[in-house]
Length: 360
View 1: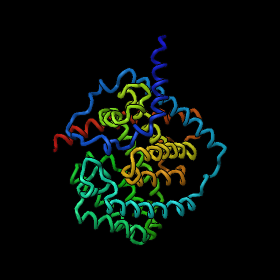
View 2: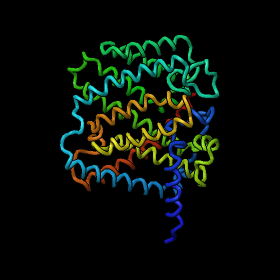
View 3: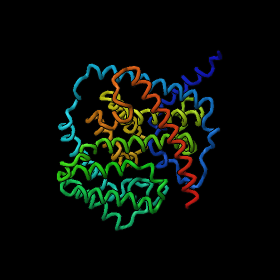
View 4: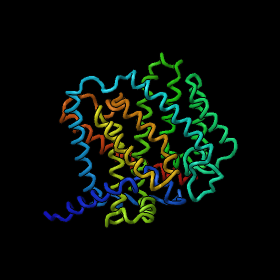
């Protein structure tokens, strides 16, 4: 068997891991310049190349091994690392303070993409620029009410309103990248003490982590279908490619991001936390190079990752991978889920993009 492909993969993967904080931004749209939303994605046959399939096999194997180790550890771990009640006591104030801080940063125009007038402000994320005075009032209302538990529903409504403004201005398809804001709004609303007697209250962390996992996997798929956005960032930082071609690094970055986000979806007490920690390291490591925009823009993401780290396994992970405790069956089910989710998201991306262009 020819050994060139394995050596190529090994060196490229190592290079991508070394430069991952610079090229695997969850939202390269913040740094790649204005994009044409009507431009078609790469054809499927150009995406699923032999190199893509080789990487798929490598990362699938890593995910399966991780799931098996996770199941093995779970046999000896016993009770949750952090009791559920204590996790909620830690997570709820953290989320409230973080969302309040983020609302104030938005109101202060601290995160606007560099190709827009910073005075124009941003609605919800750096690339959603063009906020008017009314948007500022909503941002302030969110920042104030989220600190008062009994006003949680009002704070959640303000956050949903900001998301809806983004949809009105940039389109529903564009806003799929930011589904985690809806998860954050649901978490805040369900944290209202008056809703504690309803069973849905106990699923707020699952909704929150699931929304972030889906958002990050979606933006990872974008790296496969629109590699030019990642390449535009690489052109500004060519030294981080370690001699690998731009498309190669973009593809590997997509797999690394997708796999770590998938760990959030399926991991048990250990693997889910590992995925959260590694993703957090990625975002924090990139901040010195990308500046205040990156720091402010990723506050909500880091908040959710902290909640995942504190909470550990939730009903979402059990539902995603199944409840079977066996080591081999866990690896098989997680591996099957990995292929299924990747295939579904790629298919959805092609279909929803075509629909959005037709309706625009």
